[in-house]
Image (tube, rainbow, N blue to C red):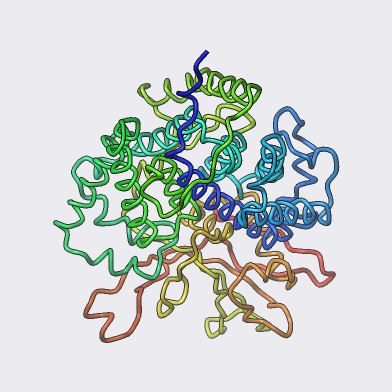
Length: 483
């Protein structure tokens, strides 16, 4: 049998860049886990992993932590993932035999899968499954001394197609503003975590916003089909994806969602256009070809469920059909909120509460708080607590399991929890009382910005957590959400 069709050296450079970029994203993901897990998921976290493992079986949530859990072991898992990712990013695995290269790429996938499957709501975002699916496929892309396998290029493009087309379809089936081209009248102001340029994007002329939405529809509903066309059409399509995703990177903070999408698009670029020259490439062994073709067949079978979801009348958004997060369905912003609300947590060290009580606000690293503080660029890093507080601002039920515990940790001055915040307004002793209020936020106008130097205008509109304290014996007074 002639296997000339199986490899294509023109994708050597694009494969190399793709692998480096994905390794960098893995590295960020493991660093995020290292920095945040103790307060969120640790033995004394807001949603402790041991409590989760006690009620969920391995088959329902495959993870190394079913074998053993401790905060120290979690640290070892995340640190190992970061170390291996750094090795892959540095290209130290390029000269390995195929089997060793595959084994090394398997390590971060298994470790991150173990984290995601015990991460509960903190790891419930679509970009977690996206990283896992891309990471699994990358295991089989091969080291730099063999020809890139064409079936692997197709599988990466199929993932990119589902990601982009799914996002486009969920918009067309969702909020009416996507169909009448007005969603960007609101989105830059109400998105979960605005970036430093989001204020300026929001104030672009409305006709330009409509052009942006129309261009987005083309990029997500038409361009993905061109990814499977011969070169140079596929490269042009990939460049369109890269450009539109870069625009999203500039306009907001969406963790590594956009960066992974750009990384996948790189795999479609004709490598001969990149300033990298391939060495003399080896022909892959027969067993590797067999593994790749078996993987291709497996993905084809598993694709039944996301395809049915895409063509069905009730499309699911960001859903995994299996516990390994393989061949998922994707989508984003099927609906767009028209008004922005923020949960503002405050504390006081006053002995008693009165109308004259001075409350100090807890500032978070990414989410809006102080109207005079400019939104920061956070992505591709991910601030999990900040993101979840955006959901709480939409409905308190999103925080029913962990928000009372968060307030309790602030009352006790828990150091791990305070590390998730931008600063501690009570550096000497914990506050005596804590509360959480809901504020309506809107961007300042150009005139208001010139006059006040503020980025936001806000006003209180309700209560999320009533004023509460710790009992004299150190046990927390129950923190109740409002009826």
